[in-house]
Amino acid sequence: MTEKKKLLYIVRYPIYEDFNLRGKFDGQLAAFRKLNLDVYHLVFDKEYFYLVHEGEKEAIGRAASHMPMYFHTRVYYDMHMAALKAMEKLRFDFIYWRDAPIWRSSCTVGRTAHKAGTKIIYEIPTYCKGGETAMSIPRRIFSLYANLWKQELMRYPDAFIFTGDADFDTFYGKPAINIDNGVNVDAMPLRSPRENTDAVHILALASMSYWHGYDRLIKSLRQYTGGQRVMIHMVGGNDGGMLPEWKKLVSDLELEDRVIFHGKLYGDDLTTMFNLCDIGINSLGLYRKNMDATSELKIREYAARGLPFVCSVEDPAFAFATEEFWIRVPNDDTIPDMNQIVNFALKMRTDKAHTRKLRDYAEKYMTWEGQYASVFQMFEEEQ
Image (cartoon, rainbow, N blue to C red):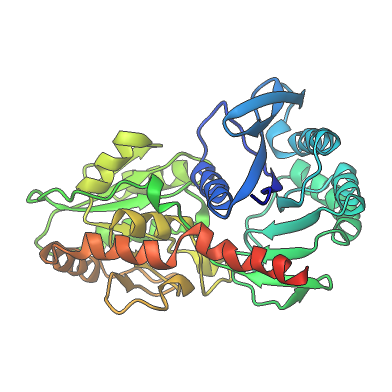
C-alpha cells in the first residue's frame, strides 16, 4: 500500500473557546483526510501549542495568551515556532497555510519548507476589491510591520488558493486556484422544519460585522405592514463589533418583541433554531466591501441543513441550481422589501421536499473535498 502523503495545516485554531470559523477549519481537515492525506494540524490553549494527529495531541510550544492583543498579533509568531518544531520532527509533503498577519518568523517557516521540498499551498480566504473595516491604531502599526516581510514570504508558496471575489491564473508568479468555500455536509444535521403558525421566523446567523448588513433587515421589518407576524432571530456573538449598534437600532425602532438576540448557539441549540426558522439571511452589506459576488460559509451551512435563504449577490456554487432555493435583494443601501421576503418564506413552506433538495445539492456541488480535489491533482500531474 502506498504511504499517505503528510500534510501540515497551519491556521490560528484555539481549542479553549468556540469561534465562528471552527466549522470551516474542521471541514477542511475532514476533506484532506477524505482525500487520503495523513493530516497534522496545530492548535493552542491558554498555555501551549499542540501538534494534533489522529486525535492525539502533543505539546510543541508555548502560548503567551496573557499578553495584550495576543490573539491578533503574537499568536502568529508562536504558531510559526510550533510549525518549525513540527518540521524538525517530521518531513511533510504539503503545508496548507491560511493567510494571516506576517512576522519575520513567517518567512523562516516558508524558507524551511522550501528547502525541505515541501509544497506550500497558501490560502487567501477573502480577496476584496476594496478595503474592509478600518483597523485600530495598534493593529495598523502591526500591519505596517507585517507588510515589510510580505514580499519575501510570497516567494515560497507553490500555489495560492483564493476563496473570495478573485479571478487569477497566477499570483506572485505561482499558480492561483480559485475555489468556493465548502461545507462538511456530514457534520450538518438535516432540518426537521417545525410547522409554524405563530409567525414567519427568519434566521440571521453571523459574527455580526458591518458587511453582514443586518441593519437593512431590521429596517425592513420596521417598514413591513403585511398581515404576518415576523420574527428575526439574530444568532452570533459580537466578533464583528456591530452587535451593540444593532441592538440600539432595534430599541430605537421599538422592535424588541420581534428581533431576538440569542448570542452564539451550538450543537442541539443551533439545530433547534434551524428547525424553527423558515428562511436564513446571507450577508446584505457586501457592497460595503466593494464585493458583488460571494462564497460565504453561512450559505453553505444553510444549504447543507436544507434552509432556503435570502442573499444580495451571486454565489458561483449555485451555478448549477435549477430550482429557486433563494431570492435576491439589492446589494446597496436601500431597504429590502419585507413583503418579498415573507412571501418567499411562505412559498417555501408549501414545498415539503425543499429541505432534502437543498441537502442533495450541497452534497453534489459544495463539499470541501470537491473543491480541493483539483488542487492536489495539479501537484500529482507535476510529478
